[in-house]
Amino acid sequence: MTNYVEYLSWLAGIAAGGITLWQAGLGAIRLWRRKSADAAGSKADIPVPRGDQRQSAGANSTQIHSVTGNITINHMATSALTPAAAPIFPVAVLAVPGKWDQALACAIAQQKIEEADWPSIGIHDTPDHVSVNVYSLIYRDGKEGRVLVYASTPLGNDCHACAPYLSFFEFDKVIGGWDLSTFSIAAVQDGAWGKPPMIAVQLIADARYGVLLKSSDMAQGWGVTTLKIYTKLGDSFDEILELMYEQHDPDGLGWKSELAFRPIAAPFYEIDVRRSGNLMRFLEGPERYQEGVADWGGNIRPSDILRFDGRRYTPEAFIS
Image (cartoon, rainbow, N blue to C red; front, side, top):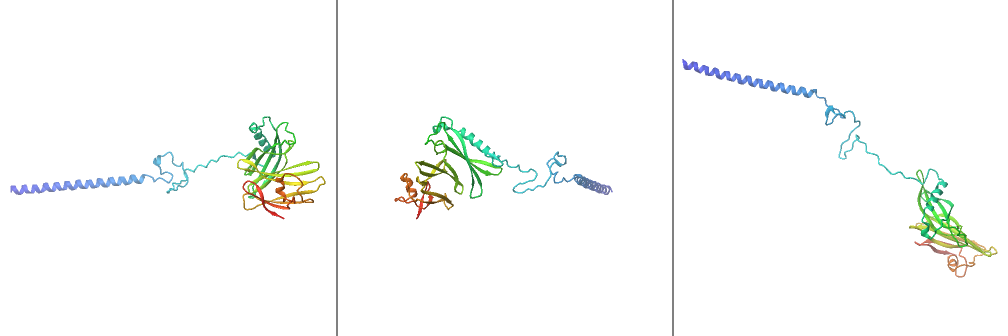
């Protein structure tokens, strides 16, 4: 009997222990479910930031709403948030802003001439500087240019053989005005009695001009005119042509020349020289002049074609 009672007590203990374990497990499950529900509720209360609020500081960021615009992120990392800074270009200072102003151009040229190192060419007294003329150019590409010529004569330099120094200032028309592209001071010395010769400026290539100087001399009715052409080769003005241009005797008999510059596929244009007159004879002068215009019998050639050989203009062919 006693053993039976003990057996029942043992079963009751086991049952009580099982109930206790079941209750503990059920409580753990209920607690886990409650925490999961609380966590889900907390996430539902957090607002999802907008595109302009997605920053490391979250909704408390001081930068919220401070940025507008679209963002494009790719391998180039371009963004509309920070516009690229505009490039800074130096502003060119034009010599003559706006329309052509000859007085201003002359003032610029005068200043540069006065600042030149005249003693370096043997002129120790201040020369007298005079504006000779301004010449207009239209280049083959349609661009415009102006060449301002100055003559500088040393004081007391007024003899027959006294020639002034010529300076050239080239202005190019650009957007907003005129730019002083290049200048050459005391580039050429030519003339007589302290005065410059007859001057013309002529295109001799698509983007290059030449300075034509004509000098006339007369003695006892005999007259002769010579033509020289200078252009800038490298850093200096060089003579590229010297040609007898005209002759006449005391009775007015003689000949004269006309020049035409013709564009060709070469560095410089060719020069078509045409001569005419009532006495087509070489009258007198140095032999080198005769070679340029006449045959050995003294007969003036009616035409010559001159072409640039890299240094000077020389006859290409004779036309009889």
